[in-house]
Structure formats: C-alpha cells, structure tokens
Length: 92
Image (cartoon, rainbow, N blue to C red):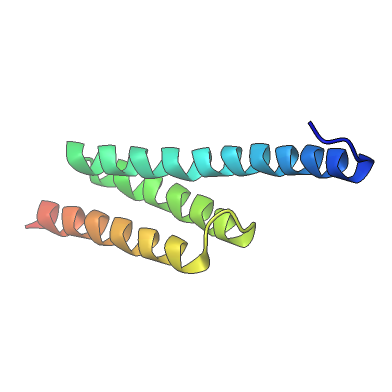
C-alpha cells in the first residue's frame, strides 16, 4: 500500500482509468464477437448491423487511447472484408 498522499491519489486514478478501459474494451470485443457469430451463421443483415456497431466501438476505443489507431483500423478492415465476402457470397 502506498504511504504518500500523491501515491494514494495515483492509485485511485489508475483504478478509475483501468475500470473505464475495461468497459470500453468489453464493448468493442463483444461487438466483434457478435459480428463474427453472425458471419459464421450466414446472417448478412445481422452481420452488417453488428459491423457498424463494431466500427463505432473500435473508433471510440482508439479515440480514448484504449487501443492504438492502427489496431482499430486493422480490426475494422478484417471484419469488413469478412462481412463483404459473406454478402457477395450470398448474392451469387
């Protein structure tokens, strides 16, 4: 346990940031899982809907510094490619 007041304050602040980051990380991970589940089930409309939610959650996470901008871009690109492949496969 910290003894100095500034160290105690830092501990409280880092706990608050960790809690916020955990919530944000849970939101985008959950959205990504739902998107992948919809893709594996072959539900195009549902996958596209979850894709939009995932993109929004990833952008917010990158904006708040939970993940890096390039990580968010990479995840969005991979999800989008999978959804697009599913949609094109359904049309043929």
